[in-house]
Image (cartoon, rainbow, N blue to C red; front, side, top):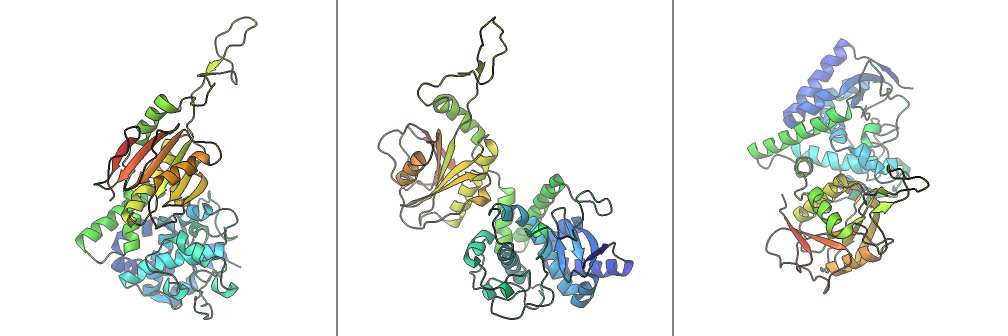
Length: 416
């Protein structure tokens, strides 16, 4: 049983020492580390976080680890919060395996922490002891690890992937709901006044501040900032470069508005305000565009190009009123994903040749044909020989590509 209470004065001093050690290795985490609201969690056996950035600390474990290892675990926990592992876990679906997601996220975080030289507790999860590649992405790790290899290898920070016995600090419920695990019975209510939860707005501001600190540190100390952190900071700080709101308004006005034959600009689904005796008048109806994004995953697309493409997908999902975006991943073969509401849900596959005609055709044929097709590509691809019924916007990532046909709206995107 876990008992939650305030930290004692001695426990706060021990936590302060752990903070100092964490900042020695990762000074860019300062803002986030001090935004977490610490409470004692007697019997938890580890550290954990919830969605409100409350930090649960087992006092016995804090003493056993000492300031160095405790500092490393503090940075581990704040890594879950900064990388939004709770929301990203939800994007995998309601049937996701929480244990495997915990393994995947732990491996990604710890790979970066090891680069800094932090002394992680013995048996901590890493890509190496899980048979995973270095510098990977959590979602990729999850799919490589799922289903779990054995029940003894799917618990929290400390279950080793080489068949070793899980260390004593491996928590029953992983790293808490803030890491994408199930909500523990010991977690405080969001409205608990003794340890206030951090608001969503404050969380977003904190992530941005930390991302800026990561970039500043990388510029001042080249080669010392983990690649995974630099990638994360770039995603946080780089807004979509294409003005999708302007592009889509233009597309709706010129090609999308009631593109299907027989549709009008009026609807009787909602009566108009004009009153005529015995006559029901229609009201004006503003069409909602149906959109599909086609992402080039051929071998010529670099990791930076793919990151730029996903950034633009994020811009589309935020800038439209569509309830879900269809995304087509294509090289010379197409894979269609439905109801995408967040770019982190997109799973890219491919790596072969390039033919965006295949992706456009897949978007046209899948379920209801979209009104607008956005193609994110480096441009070294054949295009359809004749105009499509849909408005096509080609977002060309990089420079030097041949110009698409004149009937395609072209926007230049520069990868970071």
